[in-house]
Structures are given as C-alpha cells and as structure tokens.
Length: 312
Ligand SMILES: [Ca+2]
Ligand SMILES: [Ca+2]
Image 1 (cartoon, rainbow, N blue to C red):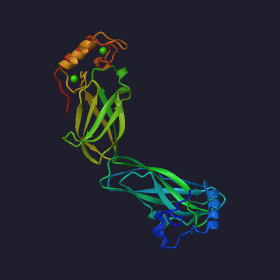
Image 2: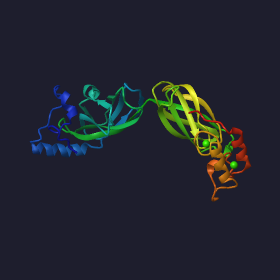
Image 3: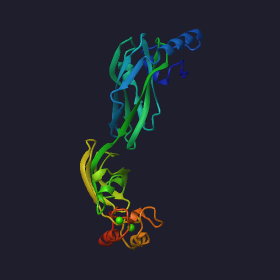
Image 4: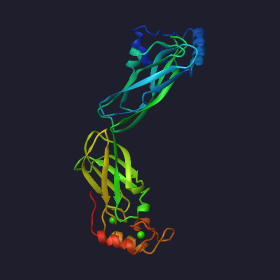
C-alpha cells in the first residue's frame, strides 16, 4: 500500500525533510514509482520488528517509551524512511522523534538494531484502562520507498494495580466456592464513587487475583456476591507494585440480592423450600449453603443473619 498524502510520504515525515536525511519521491515520475514499488514489495517481510516489551504500564501524564529490535533477515538492504501509527485510541499521542533522530537510514542484510523507537504520551486526563495501537515502519529498497516494511502491535495499561487475596464465602460448601462470581469495586475512600468495577471469579479456597486500574493511592475495596452481603475493606493502599493478601469475608443470606437480609429473602426461601436443581421451584440463590438442596440448613443461615444489612 502506498501513502499518497504528499509525494508518497506520510505526514509524520515532514519534520525530517528539513534535514534532507530522506528525500521526497516525485510521484509524477511514473517509471521510478513502478520500479520502487517492485523493489519495495520484494523487500517486504525481510524485517522483523520486536518491541521490548510490547505491553507496558503507565500513569496519566506519563510518557511511555517503547524500545525495539529490528532485524533484517533478508539478502538486500532495506531503507527505513518513515514511521506511522494506527488504531490509537483518544488521548494517546505517539512521539516519533526517536525514530527520526536515532535510527539508521537503512539496515543491511543480517544487521539488527535495538534502540528506543517511539514514545506514547498519556494525557493527564486519560481514563484508567488498557489501550492498544500498532506501529509501522515504512521504507523499502531505497531512500524513496514508503511501503510498510515492519510493524508490531503494542499496548499500554494505564493505572494498573494488581490485587490478590482471599474471599471467604461464609456458611458455604467448600467444594462450591470455585467459580463463584464476585463483583469488586475500587472506590474513592469514604465514598461510593467507583474508580474501577470488575467481576472476579473465585478459585478454589476463595483465592482471587485481578488487575485493576487506579492511580496509586488509598481506596476502599467493596465486594458482593450473589446471596452474600456487600463488604467494604476501607483505606487500602494500591500502587503499581500491587497488593497481596487482601482478605474479605462475606455474610450469607441475601437471597434476592438487595444487600439486606429480611422478610423478602425469607419469602424466596419459602417458595424454593424443598427444591433441588431441575425442580420447578428451584432457586440457586436460596441454596445458601451450596449443598444442592433448599431446606432447613439454609433456613438456619437466614435466621442467624436475619436483619443484617451490607455495607453501602
Ligand atoms: Ca435481601
Ligand atoms: Ca442448601
């Protein structure tokens, strides 16, 4: 594919033109264009571009630098004439000056270069989350070519905080814990303002691990599972270094999921009483202890916790 933006060169090339490092092709010279196209196609796939690494983390306002290794596995020299970016999401601005300032004009057969290739500037207002893009180096058989010769996808995870720990599902069969979904919220401390919300799936024993997105700082972490009340762990310090050993214990009995244990839950238990999976009145959330039956064992849990209300 040929970029016809201006004389066959992408807009990112303009600053370097003043340095006369890489001359402009004149598209009106048809024969030259044909020859360059043929040679550029022949040069494609010679180059292997690897980012070191392709996935990085950053905080809003950071500039993230991508180092890269480019190797010429072919038998001809490939000229490196330009760099471009695709699929970038809003608020992330690539800086290609590293390529134009530091990278060689061409790469001979068997040669390899490792150097910083480009930077991604994260706007101070960028939302926490994962962003992805791709970078493409253009060039070809000579200093006039502008065909894609190497490309790679890259990612940046903004505000990554890895959290692990254990959720105790009170009054629940140990064998039924694995696979239970838990809704997790990271909140500004002392508020219900949610910074990040995710659904975790518990492993055996209630252990969990997830990567959240939040700026380094102090937060409340709140968790709720289907028929357990919400519980908040206040003032948790999160950072890109991660947090391990978070423990949280959830009170059982909220059959209808409204974060309180009262007569409405009792009504649902009564409706499902005596049922088992497949039964017409089976309600999995009424099987509080997870033994596959709704019976007196579940009623005992409801009675013990009756009147309790979860954290907001
Ligand atoms: Ca309830
Ligand atoms: Ca039961």
